[in-house]
Amino acid sequence: MGSFGTLKMGGQFVILSGIMHFVAAIFGDTLLMASIGVLYLLMGMGLTRGMRWLGYFAFLFMIFGSMLAYGFLYATPVPQWATITIIVLDLLAALNLFIAIWKAPVTKAPAA
Image (cartoon, rainbow, N blue to C red; front, side, top):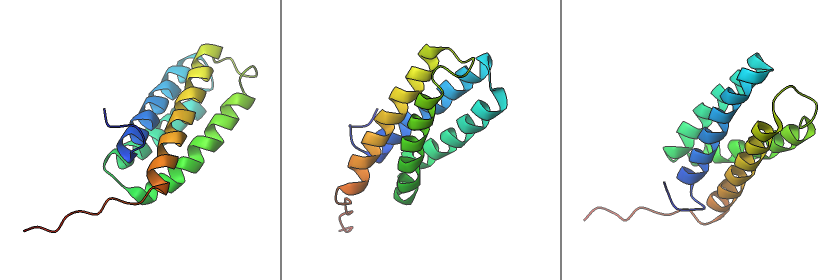
């Protein structure tokens, strides 16, 4: 695990959210949840590699995804515990990405 507020930690939360989308796909809305899970896994892998530009898109996806999941909390056959877990993971990912994106980028020291 990385430290809180880094792209790597944000990517790990995005990957966990993607895995939870696959778990939710077992209970209902299979194609939609599975496709979102694939998208989140790909975004999370890019973020753990340090793709800062992807962080801007992922941040918006996490905010929008958490609001959408909250709107569907009681409207889908997916159990509430799975939906609440997705909401919490999305918000933790968004918080990490917010901190990582809006702090000054770390410059690499020149090789001696």
